[in-house]
Image 1 (cartoon, chains in turn red, brown):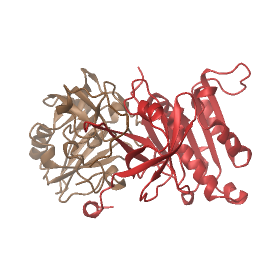
Image 2 (image 1 turned 180 degrees about the horizontal axis):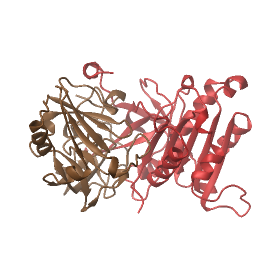
Image 3 (image 1 turned 45 degrees about the horizontal axis):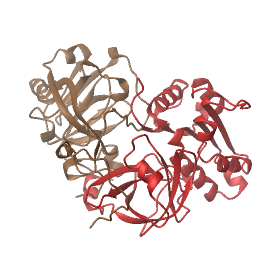
Length: 258
Length: 205
């Protein structure tokens, strides 16, 4: 795309979205299923801007990753309620089925994956960083119904959560992996692992990435999404182990660690 | 015109609203946005180049660069992902100072600049937005060396545009006769990026 084509591209319009359903995912996260009038379609990994307007005209906006794959009609946004979150607390506590809100999108053309981009796919998530990666896994499952087709694009997910109860989409991920021998999902629990937890109990590190990821010679496509310190650590470890920096796409949220 | 969100009041701070561009909110943190891994290269290998449209270039190594006249700026910054941070303190070398020195070395400027960075990131900025004390190559934040996560050892700082224009890990400023899209500008973000006109995405007026 060039500067001149930029001038002729239509504006990404604000659209009205109607909440068709709400699903509590964990104590702090909730998925909104939205029917968006005139939605132009999206790619797995993209996000939307949500705009809220108070009765006196005050407005504010936030960005949320899309959790649903391009194949589904309703747009799913999974929102984590942040402490003091002006918008997230409204979306997680106040908003209900039948309400409307405004959004525009899809936004972002870099942190995206389409089935024809191929694999192998290495997804590394921390906390609610799973959301855009879930859109990729759902897209892969929806677009590749045949086992042999999925085997041509193998995928692995390394997913770090604070506690077992904080694992978003836990049951769906388990179902996905049990129906798909070319999908491997590994969880690590960093704070409160159940006493019978046999998996990893530490933050994502180099050893974990080497054990679970593909070797650099397989040239995996790598997407890392999560809190800034986690993404910094994972992306740096991947570079150190020989993965080309330009095959590692990242999306960070929140501040640098202390 | 806009749809009223039932039950939404917001937590606005009316004392600061004149400093917030449309659609932005204030944060006290310093979030990090980068498309890929953070480059970490030894300072001994660092150099900054200004490349003219006549093929001439001027290059400074770290020692030479940090010996140039310094500029300090206390400024608000605005990220396209919606956060704004007030009163951030930066120190670096003004683009004016770099241009002056580069002109002595025969570097011919042009109306547009492409900032080119470690890691392959690029962003385009009109020259007029870099001159007149408006912009610098910053290497000190809040009195301390700039962290790699935030663009250290040195980043472009163009605070009156959305912060993606303030390219992290900048290594070269390349003059261009006409405007061309950089990295984010070629994947859906606005070619210019003025927060006060809310020029977030391609197609925004």
